[in-house]
Length: 333
Ligand code: KG4
Ligand code: ZN
Image (cartoon, rainbow, N blue to C red):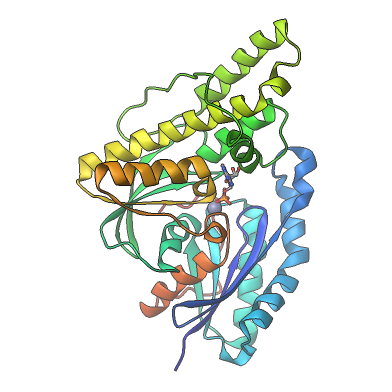
């Protein structure tokens, strides 16, 4: 009999549902929440209300696109954490109700584990062990991936995440939210002529808060002599910010590869959509003899397909949870 999984992702500001059949993604629908743009960041209360409004239409669309009937679904999977608790609650509650009404097993998924396992949606797939640099709006991790369900975080940020570094510096430059994709677009038209110092952080850990402060002071100084400094130099500023964030990330992943002797290197999470990072990884792969893995754009940012593929491995191991399960805002790998 086939295994068909309905997966739900609602950890932050994207409501997503996906259908997976025997390891293959049949549909992956994502509803982005535009409401946060005017606030310059995700407003938790607004996010949970939007999930509540969107979850049923998104699930219906995923089922329709997959061309399956409700009776074929073998299990329902959902993001348990990490994330915004009000957002997670919507997905978890939906999954509970759906599972209860149809008498289905439930599978809980760690969102960060799912970002890594997005590499198992398509081929070629990494071979164990491999390293994954998981970079999103909330996390920056170097993960040693030993098996589908066996991962160890060997490096992490001590302050802001890489996505936050993009979003917060973008906000300082007057860019909308999320600034990451806008900086990426502008950077293509500029040169990294402004040099921001690279922080010194021990081992495989990262720090991005100093970058934000140094950009703030640099711009304040320049604006004193030229009030139009930001607009006149926008593309070069974006290229400079991006170059520094990418170099911070690349230097640590190179160090991790050297320390572990592992030469299969992947990137995952929203920031892995960044063209500068994608190019830098490809280039490092050629120079250092790594095999590199870069996800399709639709599997970089938050999506339920990655929840579905993670749930597929858990389903095979019968790792189910009961109705007493609750979401967790902080959920370690
Ligand atoms: O994984 P994700 O969709 O959500 C979280 O789990 O946080 O990541 C969102 C983050 C945001 O900070 C956004 O600015 C960043 O990913 N991002 C990018 C790009 N696309 C999304 N950052 C840089 N360049 C991009 N092209
Ligand atoms: Zn994410």
